[in-house]
Image 1: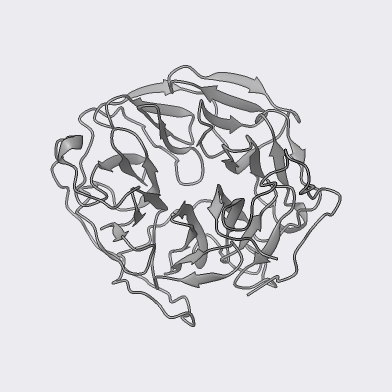
Image 2: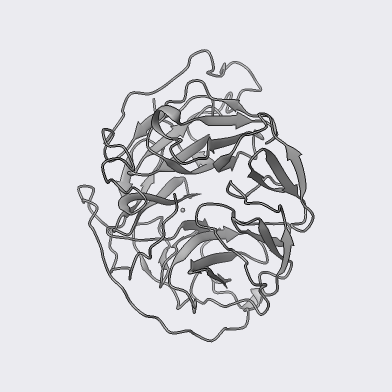
Length: 404
């Protein structure tokens, strides 16, 4: 399902009015290679403020809804000022939210509910509504859409009502960290006011044009990470000052970050950074991203995104969960059901719940399934979930309110 073509040169960006239509953008530019800059020390980091039309009918399965009087129910006794949620983002601008730990999903909306991706010539991978990332920060959830044709970053306080904050953007992911929102592009785009205003970040020095994944990791004082892929080649750059300056690792094994657009990912915790490629190769760094070592997770492909649970890095191949505490030694555990393949996945550290979308070409609409798990091994389909346009990302976070 991944894109095979570069998005072109990002246009100038601005805060769009709510009535803005997603515009198309085509372009091509050449970019020379920039010399690698040594990693800046944490002491020298720039000062950054502290710290990514449709179905209005809610789909609720009353039998699965949590009892608010149960003290162990998610958010029991908590008012709408701080709600734990899962938000999923998909093609054709689709979004859907769960406010009860993944049991029920509501506010399922898209740019066109009547359309069907990859039917009748509709290429949803290259479309203004193509899903390219999701992030939480400052009481907002942000999504970025648009690949091949310019889309938009949108934001929401409840996962149901969305407003665009860019127009014509083509980001290879979006990330929030240290009070800043970063859109992965060349140059990256930075916002210090939750998407109200945007400006160019520093020259990345990437040798490849297409940014495929963007992430923030709270290690070594904080790192933004961009991974680029093109024509079988891969590149990685990092920033320790919120995207103002970027530098390349002094040692990066070949193959790090391969096939990362749709699988694997970037995560960091406890002083460790891990980049997991879709080919099952994990690269880990203990020094803030300057030097990396490569370790094989599985001989086959990784199907899912990478998550960190607070104690372990976790990813999935078909029929197996792969977990590691150090990014070096990975232990495989068979899943139940044994042939399950998942792609977009998220973990809520407050409840321990995993939520994942089943992976597979054509696993959309009537065939689309979403699963929950307490351990990432035993999975149960969410009976109340209604399929729709392909979902590409799921994330957990906290928002001020939830849809009624």
